[in-house]
Image (cartoon, rainbow, N blue to C red; front, side):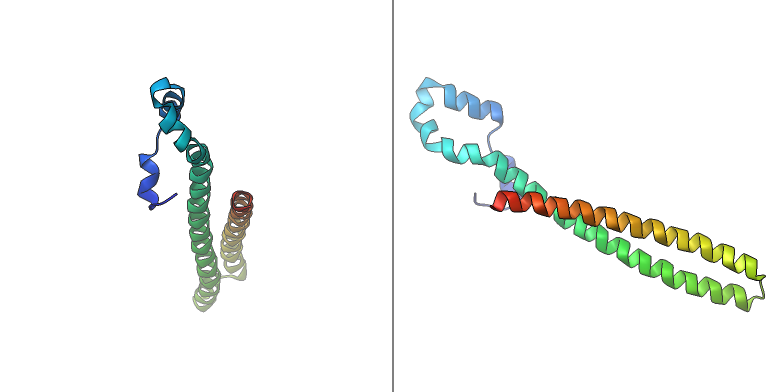
Length: 128
């Protein structure tokens, strides 16, 4: 297949392919096109897998940045609350909430990484 991402939108639909293959007047031309047309759905799915993998990598990177940001925020909140003379329990409650948010983000990253790995495995199946 040649062309960039825009080229995917110019391929024949399944109905058009079926009509072309079953049309007696187009038999000679259809026989020449048939091998590449049979591969199109797999190639399109392969391209979609790669697009999804790139998107997942971007999301994972973004969430990892958020995790670092939350970790930094935990330290800043601890310092600010202690500096203001807040009671230790109030400081710990605030930190607990921030840590829970951090755990949630880490879980999301793990799930997205697992999904990305599954997409990569699926893409490897196409690449053979």
